[in-house]
Amino acid sequence: MSLLRKHSVLPGFNLTMGFTLLYLSLIVLIPLSATFIKTTSLGWGGFWQVITTPRVLASYRLTFSAALLGAGINTVFGLLVAWVLVRYDFFGKKIIDAIVDLPFALPTAVAGISLATIYSPKGWIGQMFAPLGIKIAYTPLGVVVALTFIGLPFVVRTVQPVLEEFEVELEEAAASLGATRLQTFLKVIFPTVWPALLTGFALAFARAVGEYGSVIFIAGNIPMVSEITPLLIITKLEQYDYAGATALASSMLIVSFILLLAINVLQWWGQHRHSKR
Amino acid sequence: MSIQIRNITKNFGNFSALKGVSFDIKPGELVALLGPSGCGKTTLLRIIAGLDSPDGGQILFHGEDATQRHVREREVGFVFQHYALFRHMTVFENIAFGLRVRPKATRPSNGAIKEKVTRLLKLVQLEWLADRYPPQLSGGQRQRIALARALAVEPKVLLLDEPFGALDAKVRKDLRRWLRNLHDELHVTSVFVTHDQEEALEVADRIVVMNQGQVEQIGAPDDVYEHPATPFVYQFLGDVNLFHGRVDEGWAKIGETDIRLPEIDHDQAERALFFVRPHEIEVSRNGNGASGIAAYVRDIRRYGAVVRLELERADGDGFVEAVLSRDEFKANTVSKGDEVVLQPKRIKVFPQSAGQEVMDYVI
Image (cartoon, rainbow over all chains, first blue to last red; front, side):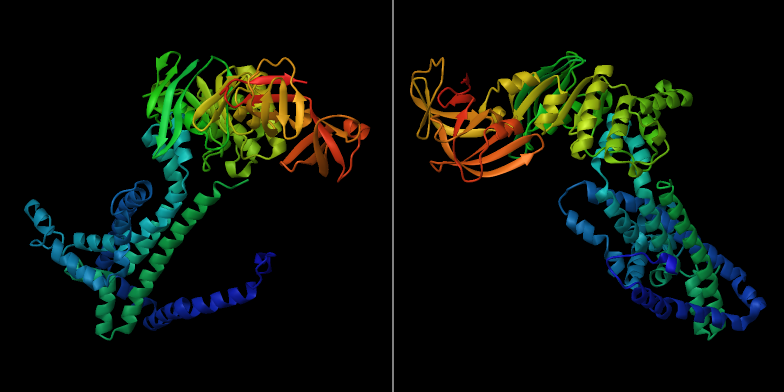
């Protein structure tokens, strides 16, 4: 620990570190470890059995793939929205900037109900897809739509400041050296933006994995088809199967933690590659 | 390659940055665009590069109209004040960038790129930095890498926007000498923007002095320094003392003092501006019978090889600065509070009615 201490004009390492640990313990670590402790009452065999039933496995597949897909969609379009907001001046820009944050503020149930209504075969958007044979609401596709909706602000808000700081001179330099617009984007702009993009992706993904409120209204919740893991956890809680619920929660926690850790490592690697001696 | 600038105008909203600028740049020349900030020099450079488009006028490269040509196709190398190096690429990759983005048909092989980049690194004397990243370099090193990167695409024209503006004084002096030598070696037509008259006078073959979106004077450094065309140029190139007065039948009347101007053919009495450089003033003690402008010594400061005197005119009409060599000062020493007489050794007269007409008197 003493290795981490450096002389600084602002003292208080002990105080702030102590507070950080206490705060993290109260808010994050103790509740989470309680989950794991409750799970242990099942024993390994029971734990493994609960988390590997076909219905649970199907829910994992849906939850994680829909979350990845939603976060992926947000990464592409969030970058686009951030780009437009940073680079261009247009009428109503401030309003659009504010709209981006709405998914944060809206109660998720409201979002779920409105999305379900609009994307149902009779809804405004759903009726356009119905003749093509594409059903959105009450299918896994609906889950993706909901998870995309709630994750949008993360990518926009992490990428926006990086784009704002990006020097236009770098683009001009690339152009004067003969780079086409695509080359300038791929070789100059994208490498600068991608750590922020990855952070935004990770946040959107993490949020999507844990999302419950908006999804259950649009998903249809058909077992084996459009049932997400958080819903299974709630179902188990309603049946007073607390150990089973915490077992599912623990398995989700572990997978999410591994994925987020991997993203962090990827980011760390990306940043340190450029400052090695 | 020669560049012709024809009546270029550019407005930003109500502000007119360039008001019809025209001049020619000869092949292989090193030209300085010199002027105070906001005079339009950087805007003009960006228009030559194709990074900005003019509202009116034409840019001709080698006699061909290049006004509409995209920066990518102009074959110009542009060096930015703040380097604009790509932070996520090594020094090597930065320099190689212009070669790697070429279409497949004209892109050199990896071996050829390596050879060329190594040659350029040698040229800027930074071979050992090839694998570093830009944040690990000093300002002077970054600017040399930026120059190497611009030269890698073999530009027909090299454009530099305040290339040494962000560097400290010592590095700046070294680098501008180095740039001059480099230019003598490569002979690529070059234009650089600066607000530092010393830099322009030392480095350039020709200087274009700009002010408020217009060209004030174009000429060789000596020419511009010795024979400034306008009061602005005189004031901008070096320190200067300004006196308001009148010219009248061979005499300059400054306050209560009359100074004889030889070879005068300006017999009409009128108001005029008189400019005197600080090192072209003789300071002598009062009472030696010398006639001149009476003043009091207010401050004496020694800088390196010179002594700088701050003098207040006895008639209360402002301050005058005089610069003496240490020897001159020793031979005729004065101290704070002394009353002295100032005799200009050389006066530049700008009669107010004459417009741009200038009279240069050596006394």
